[in-house]
Length: 271
Image (cartoon, rainbow, N blue to C red; front, side):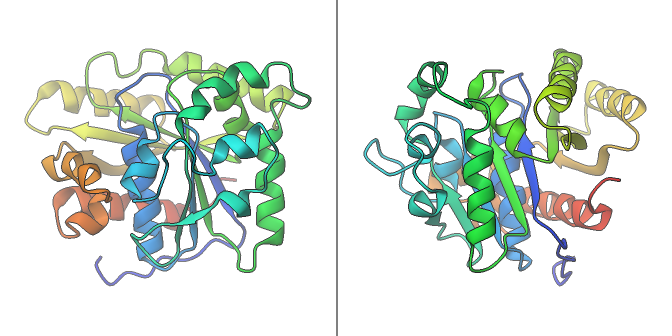
């Protein structure tokens, strides 16, 4: 697998990584899949739409309060190109950071014109005007269904749902799927749940295996066969401003995210 070159998509695949349940490995999945694709030669953009800015931290990009960020894009209509930073992780990996200002954006957006489409409009402009095409865009959402998450759903064509292999894993999932269906009906007919990734898997427990079986039974065509294990290396990497892909490239966590990326590339765009 170390030598595998992943096939590049013909058009940009835009994923919103979403789960209304917190602590399921959403940001971890976003940055590590993005790094895995960039490592294999794809041009990748991560949009950090979570006010906590954890994706920005893991990708090693500046996101102090005064840093130009995604807030300037969705609230002040700055261009994405003007706030995009290159991640030191890999040559083809870019990030639009989140700053603390984003916490107030939910309230500011309420009274704005086309409040659900602001991210989509800015992203379309970036993709049309970019010197080189982006192959993948990953949008990291806050763990709630507010206007920021709705903006992410409207801007994307695919939804990737990380599911933690623990008790209550499926709780809230039907609500999330209903929300995606509603947004698909009213705001973005191209949106589809294409990928479900099982995270924090501990093969020693019956519960983890049971959850994995349940999810596969419910969503046989969407769940990746790759499982992301519980891993100290995955947890450590962000504290060094890195993804696990660069922090410890041959660790179990890194290899599993690289395998998940390879599986997503092989599957291609859903019909």
